[in-house]
Amino acid sequence: HPSRFVRQNVLKILSNMGNNALVVAATLLADPSNYRRKPEGSLEDESWYRLRNAIHILGNLRKDAAVPVLEMPAADSDFRLRKEVVKALEKLPGRRGLPLLKKLTLDTSEEIRRMAFVTISNSAGEEDLDFLFSRFDPASADTIPVIYAVSCIGGGRARDFLIRLLDP
Image (cartoon, rainbow, N blue to C red; front, side):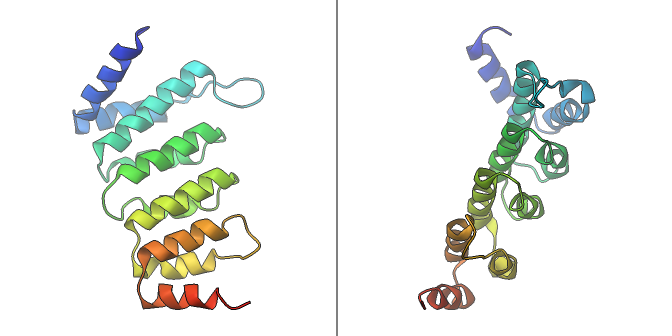
């Protein structure tokens, strides 16, 4: 629809429709014809907006069932889609999105990795510290996001890890 106001309201309405909206979003994301690309590889504008809206709906549903649907766009070559996936996963309660977020900490984009680490810090627990410790590399651009995630989890192991970082 040409009116942004109408589109925004439709997104809100769909986000409140539960499983029906989940099916619609999953169908949009699974349809290869919705992934039309420009010659350089990024999504055409119409495809981008359609797919972004589907991901947005999945995040707003706040349902665990959205996570498997987000796997495909999380692996897409278009940076913007992967960024929207992290934003959607940030809205999910609990730990269901953690495996996909952990995959996204390996993304080629520093921004996506940073967003994934910050989002992990919202739902991870002490059982996820070993993963974060394994991702710590003082020479990496991910150093600060990893430290942030560790500090948000807290606990004795996190404290000891952070204290060791004070040694020159």
